[in-house]
Figure 1 (cartoon, rainbow, N blue to C red):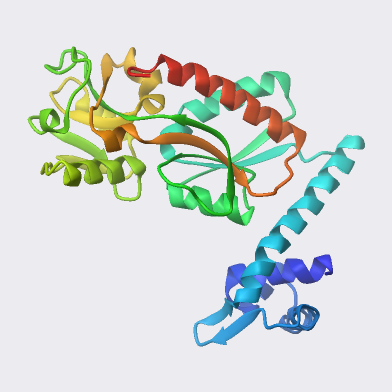
Figure 2 (figure 1 turned 45 degrees about the horizontal axis):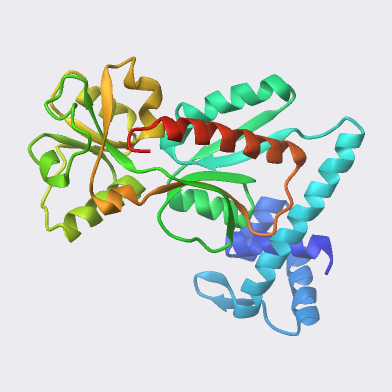
Length: 304
């Protein structure tokens, strides 16, 4: 199958219409339509179902989409290697990550990586776990870093380690000296939580349901940064992974206490790549660095 036809097909699948793909590609609708027709003739089956809401992939189209993405990415990887031989490599690592690791850990790791790879450049998208997984599976980023509690289709896990949710509080808090706390313990104090769509919030709500505990957060926010200010010098407690707050514990006189609930203990931190995707050597080297640094940091965490 011709590379141009596959590229047009992928764009139509992502845009949901010929006109949408035309705008993204700056190619006439008629040219795209001809290439799609050729692919359908070659496949011997319709690749799209024409509907009022646009063009929806058929079963055959869904099968071809996974192949097309891998083929195009493989071609791009080979072209990058050829460019590297000429000293013209792109040198950019595209990533997607959840906010908890994107604020401090990832930028710091990127800066350290550039000591050995000074030509490296990074493009980072910050989103929810679902956003990260989607971008990895569709190939728009090479690497995803996210907290995860279930298996995902279309991605391969390159690193996985338990990263439970902790109760983070001021060093002088009545619960700060505990080896662990329960959900019932947390109910006596104001709670600060991230919003829906995060693994922390999902596991907290699941844990409360299974233990028949009713807890309502006092403060919620889609960004965890304001939560730090809320627990600062007060009796409030925020829920967070150790890796998200390790940098601020000493500076802000905070402590992270393990939570005994099984759901909040079950979370893992993972590095994802697209299934079957061949990665440039620079990206592989960055994955190796991240894996080593995550091992060290997570080993330091309370209850590790």
